[in-house]
Each structure stands twice: as structure tokens, then as C-alpha cells.
Length: 273
Image (tube, rainbow, N blue to C red; front, side):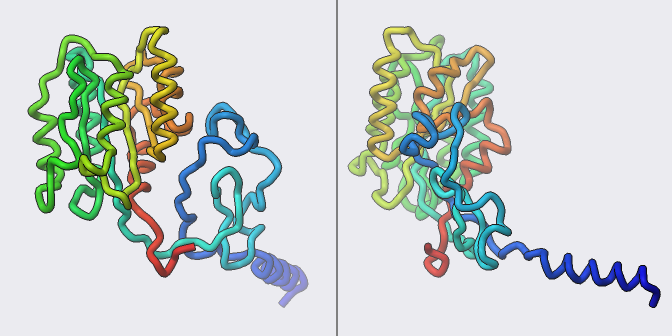
């Protein structure tokens, strides 16, 4: 064995010894808070930045059995999750009802319904239209037992007739808030999620009322996500409604659907932190 080969093998051994294998498992899902006590400003997302209190920036800065994960406002070294179990989710979908955008809205809702694991012990779906009537099309209490299925949820969408114009967004949001009442079928142990599919174009006078109802959702621990329908959407209002600006989406695409799907899983008891 010549000197060059020996040197190469020595360097290879040193590099292999210094390289830490990635821990098995995934970061636990933690819902980002709305306000990180000044670290992220008023919104915990796109329009702000975090500073200073991260424990780590990569897995190799943690001990061998731990991963570097975003936990709330900062990165921390935590034990990874290796076993996931189904988590109950109460998902209400509120959508623009006007006929001009209806084909796109209908397609968006179809994608969401197909993506979620709908069932008695899994995800329950409620539907509401931003129309003049602003009445829920489907409440959490209308389907029970084995009838809670993709097919039956979609029947309510197929039966809906779009309208010439949308109704008031504020009224629709207030009605959606009532959908999460346990007396109307919402479950105590389920994560509450409101998904608003809308261009959210409102009058200036309606802005304060939207602010108020958005805060009511935050106070009630309902996670609100928003999706714009067309290029005419009001980004400012969509951000105003959402729990945080990280929950504002330009479309129902794979990234958005995968993030929504994550809400359906939780660590099994053996992996609970």
C-alpha cells in the first residue's frame, strides 16, 4: 500500500467518524403561535423574522438521538417522532359563492375533500357559502357515523347553486364561527380549522368588523387559513383573516394540501413528548 492510498484511507476514516447519522423519525408538528412575544412581531410568518433564541440550526448541533425542529417561535433540539396516529380534525370550508368563479372554487373544494381522511373518528367536514343567505350548507352535526364520508360530503357541494354575487364576508365568518359550537356537532377533542376560499374583496367600512371576528377565531383557538381565488384577491384582507400570514395561500396546490394533511396526524402515546 503506497503512501497516497494510506493517506486517503486515513482521511476517509476521520470523515466517517466525524459525520453524524441523521436520527430516525420526523419533527413533531407544532402549530406556530400567532405572536412570539416580540420575536416575530405581530405576525409569525412572511412579514417578519426571528432572532437570537434558536438552540440549533441543524441536526448535527443536537445530541445523536435528537433533531433540530421548529417548536413554536424557535428551533430546538427535540426527540423525533417515529410513530404517528390519526388526529381528529373539524374542518369548516367557507367559500365564495358567485357564479363567475364557481368552477374554480368547486374544483378547489373537491381537491381538499379528496385529500383529507374523512370518517367518524377522523376528519369531519362542514361547508358554508359566502352568499346573501350565508347559511351553512353542511354542519358538523348533519352527518353521523358511517355516513361521514367523502361521497356524502360531496353531495352537499353538488347540490349547491352559485349566486350572482357574494354576500358579506363578515356575516359569513360570524356564521362559520357558530359552526364550531359543540352543540352543533363540533368535537371537544378535535383540532378546529377554518379554511376560507375567497378573493376577500370587502368595503373599507367592513374592515374593522373583519378584524373583530378574526380575533374571535384566534381567541377560540380555531386555526384559520385563507386561499385566494383569482388575481383580483385582496391579499391584505386574506392576511387579516388568517391566524398568521404563513397560512395565506395563493392556490390549493400540493404544498397547501400537504400542510393541511399534516393536521390529521399526532404522535402516538409511545412518542408523546
